[in-house]
Image (cartoon, helix red, strand yellow):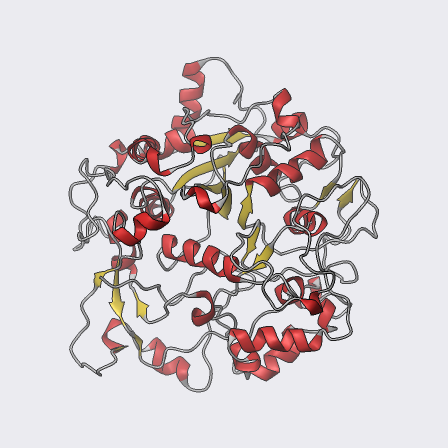
Amino acid sequence: MIKRHLPMSQLGLEHYVMFGMSSNWEEKFYRGGTLTVAHENDDINPPIPVIYDPYPEYNSAQWRKEFTGRFHVCEGPRGKSLSRSSAQDMMSVYPGNQKDFPAPMFGSYQATGLDGNVCSNRFSRLGAYGYGSDTTHPTSGVNWNETNWGSLQSQCFERNVGRYSPSETNSRPIRLTLPVHPRVAARTLPRDQPTSSPHSSRYKPRSAVILRAWHDMEWTENLKQNVRSLITELSLHSGGEYQVFVLVHVKDESIPIYTDDDEVMKEIKARFIPHEFRDMVVLFNENTLKSWYPRVEEHSANFQYWQPVQIFSQMFQDFEYYWQLEVDSRFTGHSYHFLEKSAEFAKRQPRKYLWERNAYLYIPGAHGIWQDFIKMVGYSMKGRKSVWGPISIHQITPIGPKPPVAFPEDDKYEWGVGEEADLITFLPIFDPTDTQWLFRNLLWGLPEDVPRRTSPVAMGRVSRELLHQMHVIQIQRGMGLVSEMTPPSLALWHGLKAVHVPQPLYLDGKWTSKEINRIMNLGEPDKINGGPDSLWNWDRL
């Protein structure tokens, strides 16, 4: 079975990710299609899609050396066990790429471990999830209106409960709404009970995938197909390693989401949420955020995008990691493969000059392979001050590990290798202090000169520990930052590992790599894009 990734993993970064060509590729590519897919042996026959399987060999001898418990196949929407050999249950791909398909300008398949040597069309990508069900590509045997994805995920987890840490197996019914007031226990986290289990436990850590939505959005067929694909690929086929939720912002505060009347709540769900997703939806409104964080002045969704996730993590502490994705983002490739490879890349990264590397847009054509890029950044940092351990600020006691040596120059790129990242982003993490980035001074209860970092677009993975620290400074101290600055800044202050994953990005325009590098990576080596000419200045986007 092919274990490969599709050519792009577009995460809904509409303002930043552009599909691009150069030279005379445009005309050749746009006249293409699956008939122009190029195989390694130049086979001229029309390509045939094959099942795409990125999952480990569960229950194999090698797998059982690494993890405890046993994998059990889960039930799918057809009422029977899922099959990784069935195109009805799996996405398909075409081996190879379209002729003259360009290379990404930014990021790298090789560095991240993604495979850009397959492609798909709309049927092979979404056919298993309902695309084309009213055309010549019917999806047989599924009545989506009678599917209950929340129940399927819960049953799948229960079948595989032996694979997970006892602290992560306290399964409970999903509350329809986030609680309107914090529990007393939510104000503190005992320091003698670490949230991260040591890797020697061999339990597989679980992750929540939180799709951010709003109550009156249109549930298009494409949106429903996308959510079905995330649930199937991330949760059901993995035996519950992930669980997908839809966190819905009810913008109309006249809607009584905190009523005790069950019939009213059923009517609210029926009015706004398709039947198949109702048991995986959690509602909140702005009053929810105000009741939890009264000491922070700002609670609007634009500026406090992480507050609902912080509350969610207090109510659902069964997960080691929390991925936040916008509901209108899309994976053109397989979602399990993309998230797993992103986490593996982050785990491989050494901490030496990590914060400095995070600020770059990695351009292979200008920087070389990833190891060359690491060496380049290291060489440029000679004689310059680097982030090494926590950047302490008033009222914050760092919880991250101390560096093993006093100076980064004394480390051989060993510290941090094999360490899970507390923060994973898909765009650069940079210092906004001296830029004209629009939200650089949106701080509450903090001085304007406080050291900070940001990563545009509030999507990515945050650990349970980091989310708790984000929660603590707001509920106890009334300290807050705008959404995009919150996780990176808390990671900076606590000395936690943060990694920008260089996903492949395509650029539209006839530019050379070196030209783009001069435009996109401006500033001193210790503050790339952190000055007055920053790429992230509002007038440059």
